[in-house]
Length: 461
Image (cartoon, rainbow, N blue to C red; front, side, top):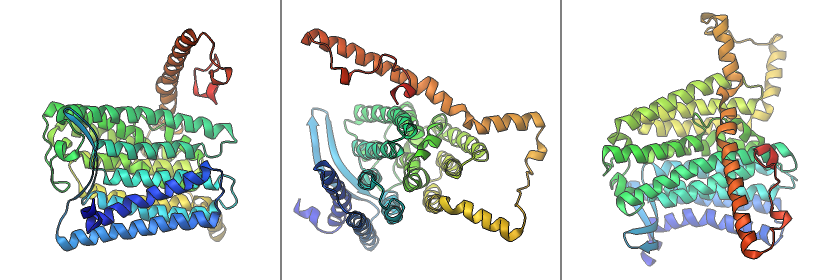
């Protein structure tokens, strides 16, 4: 342990300890019922982001000075059983460093904006606790050197996302939509968990270096066969599609706009929506092994971009329009990764995340800007529909219905994924209650029982 406290190890520990300490402090304060002041919370968040950003820049400067592109930080094996071990490992390379710096920088901007945006909001402390979970999850995911470490960060991002979608819990709609988002995330996380099990089965460990080859990204070479790469890659692709709202999981994206604007900006405009593309970049050596996997990634990315571009043009509120505009770019980024590009998608992610953050934060004032523009021009600006002139009325009508219904993916998710899963879990719960009732000889408490009609998301909300 003492050698970790010198050189790059010290920078790495600071990067991990700062967001973890913020979660611990805000969580304990909420747990004991102590209300921290808004100014104190704001300063703690800004301190965490600034110190984390400086530590990240220090790590980058050290790596450039030493001429190294790969720095591992191992914190030991947490579980060891014959032929398997689970370790906590973080890596600093040309992929993790930019994404980690982007996370600290944008979270600092969003934290400063939210201080005024949610001033005197009763849920101020609750928002920043979820926000700190998100920051910790992003840092862990960005720097993860093993699949289990990445899964832990992936889960923290998902939990905080669903909680912030349902932030305004006094209304039924945010709670219902938060539950819907969480249901889709469960499917995505299940696919990632199965992929992690498959990696352990293949290599006996979840270390990316063992599966994807040691060395700095993107120079690794996967030590798997074509079939193994295809199976593991398809599981990861399902996880990517669920987290980044790719087709056919795009239906939850407009529902996520129920949350506060700052969370919409950082999650669905900047960082969380790009986590899927980040995971694809991390496991890009798998794509080099399997042509079919690369083709599936390209097709999925292009299909998502087309559907999102159509849906964006038919939205009636600016946050949903921006979310689909963001999804259009994410689809293009995924397609770029499938085509074998590596640094271009990373640059695309960074530029797009910064642009969407600005657009989401200005969403509240954009209507005022349009009115000012109309008053200055004296007329309402109308965009020319050049493409529409080339289409027949019937085709235009069909495309409009497809766009206004958002590709019908929201209904697809509800009818064929969310509701069947909920009914399955409700049935499993009833079986468990019958078993425990038989063992205990007493019925389950009424407060614990689900309503008899619980079979859909609307019933639970």
